[in-house]
Structures are given as C-alpha cells and as structure tokens.
Image (cartoon, rainbow, N blue to C red; front, side):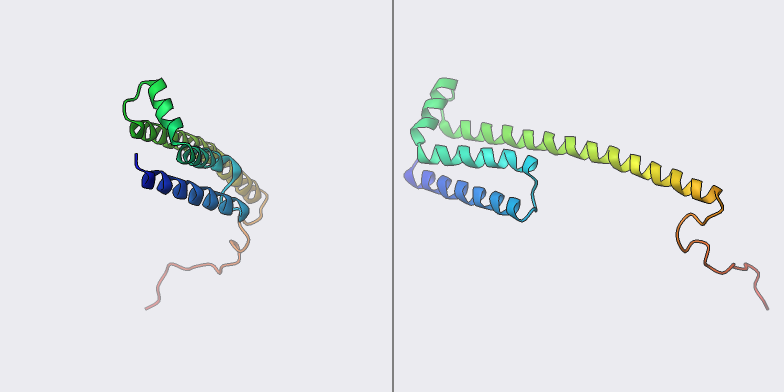
Length: 133
C-alpha cells in the first residue's frame, strides 16, 4: 500500500480513538461497549505506524494481499460487536418483560385492595353513555 494510505489509516485510527475516549468521558458510551472500538483503533494505529507488521502477518496467515487481511479482521470485529449488542438487547428485553410483569402484579394487588390502580385513575367523574334529546 502507498504511504498516503498508511497516513490516512493513522489519522482514521487516531480520530476513532479520540471519539471513543470522548464518548466515554461524557458517559455517552459504556466501557463494555467501547472495548471492541478501542481494540480496533489501537490495531489500526499499530498497522499504520508499522506497515511491515501487516505484511508479515498476511504472509504468516497465508493471505496474498494485506488489504484483504484488514477487511477480514474488520468484518470479524463488526460481527463480534453485533453479537455483543444482540446479547445486551436480549438481556434488556428479559429485564423489561420482568419489570412489566411486576408492575402488572402490583397494579392488580392495588386494585384488589380497593385503591385505584394508578394515581388519578379513580378521580375522573362517572361517564353517562345516555344522550339527552
């Protein structure tokens, strides 16, 4: 690859690392979600700073074109991010379902005790469905 491509890779890696760190500082990204992005950014920075390392790794693995190795590793990293996020989503869906069931049970208990299920639910005036002519 050309020197320009490696310089571009270094700049992109530094920007990625800066964005992830900034998001962590402002609590817009949690640590467990930032791990893969930090690993990817550091790996890209290392490859940009030491381009021969990428070519050596491609030779060892048996990949003819070092750029193909970059694409493979990038896709593998994105798959791992998707798996992590799917796992988190599943865990949160389970928690939400449990919380909704708990709220429904508490609502039912309050209703059986003679209290309105929700604050203000019993305050509305009775509605008469008959119409006057």
